[in-house]
Structures are given as structure tokens and as C-alpha cells.
Image (cartoon, rainbow, N blue to C red; front, side, top):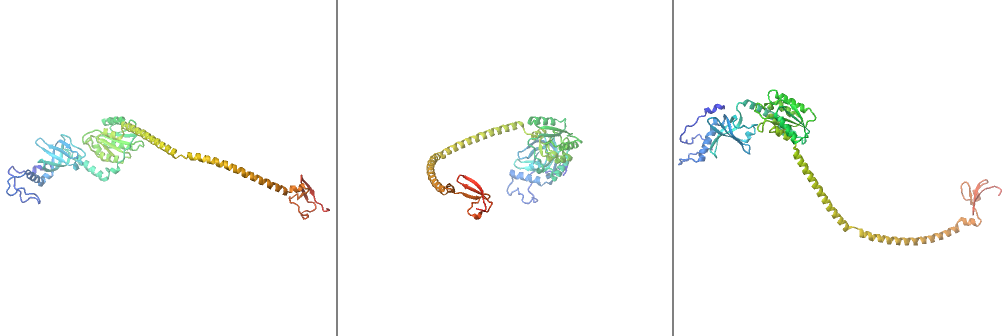
Length: 433
């Protein structure tokens, strides 16, 4: 239905409330009861609600108007008013539809809204339940935005699984933005304040205009080819939809998706969403927020280190106390279970045994000495030397040392060794003996 279709809606002239007709929908209540001449408030409100909802023209409404009094509930629903110079209309946009916007209108914005008309019975208000909302005059841009968003989402470029994790302590951060942009100054100030150790590489690019997408792509590719970059920031300040349109370019989206390094976008204000935000590994609401997300805060790191140091010191002290207590307990147990008394007793017993063993050994030695002396006397009496002393001699063959016991053992000319009491002398045998 076109925005001018409201002109075709037939209105009922003022007058008494009509009776329900036989064309009521199945299951609807018959409010005119027999014998009653009045309606309850609920009956009247329900009747009006049903009248509005059965009117097909009021269930497919386009309005062009100005936004005012916009609020967002904690549940994510939007409540606002659409007005022109002559009237105002309450509007509701449920969270499921609001989440698809990618932007939020501001006070006084001219918008085109689509929805259905119904009644909120609790307050007796008729209002427009909005399911689509776009800036007036920008319908084509939003259509292109939604077409590209849906197509890239179907390709999987927005999937959580492909998002790269951010480094905890980046050493080099690449920044893609305009060198003249205030966003760059904000990013540099925050990076320096939060984490002075980080090195910043600027890849300059236009962030607005027809040439901006190609330059953004070139800047991203230049940073991505380096081996010393840990993280890339793609940032620019706020602006209108047309001014931010470079970040809705398909080339930029695919360049972000192709980056080896994680990309954080900080484009526009908190309510501004671009295609680049959906593709990026992390979306920040502003350039300053992107810088804060990129690096840790040195003050927090110091506090964390101090807390770790205190905890480590406390752990060491606790362990030392535990070790001392265990040592004292073990010393007490050792003293209680010490074998020293038994050792002392065993030492004395050993000394006694040694003395007894010494006496027994001396006695045994005396006995053995006496036995040896007896054996010595007997051996001396039987020794060949004793025989030699009586004038006998021992004859041996000189060459082999064999004792000669028979004349059959020698021949003429054999050399003999003859041992007598006080020595030995040689001799040679002859045949004429």
C-alpha cells in the first residue's frame, strides 16, 4: 500500500454505536447483549480494536512524519511519536524489528514508517505498530544497505565462528582513517594514555566520498601484508548516512573479511551501524571506544600486577608458615619416636659382646697355638731334615728334580743334585761303580 493509501480509508460518521452485524468473524464476541443498553469499557475498547484490525487498509500503512519522544525500554522495544503539523500518533516497534534497524532515529528526524494500526486496551490508545523504519528520502540507500547486509550475511561473513580473537597485548596497531580526522587524534591520545608501549602505524585513507572505499581497501591491504601488525582499527567520526556510506561498500566489507589480523571498527556514533561493523571482528560504538578495546589499560595492569604481587607474597608467607608447622610437628615426632635410647643400649651390649668375643678369641688362639706347637714337634720329628741331620742325603735328578729312589732311574752321565744337612752339591753318575 502506498503512503497516500490512507486517503482511501472510509471513516464512519459520528453517531450511536452500531449493533454487531452478522458478518462478525467466527469466535468474536457479541457485545450487544439482550436487555442491555450500555457497554463496558472493555467491550467498547475490544470492539474498536477489532474494527481497526479487520480493516485491511489500516494493517498495511506507510507514514512519513517527524520523530519525537523516542525511548527504548530495557527489553529493547522502541516507543516514540510520529507527528506532523496537525496531528501526532503513538508508535511501538518491538525489539525483533528494532534489532534489524542498524540505526536509531533522533528527535526531529523525518522518517518513513510502515506498520499496522491497533489499540492498546490498557490505556485505550490507538497506535501504530511499526515493523519498518527508514529516514525520509533515503529509502534507496537503506534498501541497498539491507540488500547487501542480507547477501553478505547469507555468505557467512557475519558469522561468529570466523571472528578473530583480539591479542591481549598488541605491540603494533594499524589505524585506517583520514590523517586530518579528529577521530585519529582521539585514537592516538587514548592509545598513548592506556598503553604507551604500543606502536601505531597510520594507513591514510579518505573516509567519505566516492574515492573513499577504494582507498580504505588499499589501506587495509597495505597493513595486512605486513608481518609486524597485531591489530587494525578502522575508524571515523559521526555523520549522516550518506557521509558514512563508504563503510557500507561491498569492497570494504570483503577487504575486512580477508584480513589476516583482527579488525575493530569504530565508525560514527553509538547508534550508527554499517556493513563494516557486521563484518569486523569487533564493533565499537565510537573511534575512542575502538581504541579502548584495542589495548589494555596500563593503570589496570599495574593494579593487577600489584594484586598478583600481594597474592604471591601472601602465598609464600602462608607456605612458609605451613612448612614451619610441619617441621615442628616432624621434629616432635622424631624426638618421640627417636631410637637413641635403644641405640645407646645396643652400643653397651655391643661393647660387652666385643669384650666377650675378645676373651673367647684369645682363649681359642691359646688353644690353637698349643696345638700348632704339638703339630710342629711331630712334623719336625718326621721331617727329612731330621734324617739328613743323622747323615742321610736326598738325591735328585738335577734336570727334572725327581728324587732318586732306584738305580733304575739313572744312567751313566746323569747329573745329580745331592742335598745334605747343610746344603746341596752336584754329582755325575758313572758305569764302573
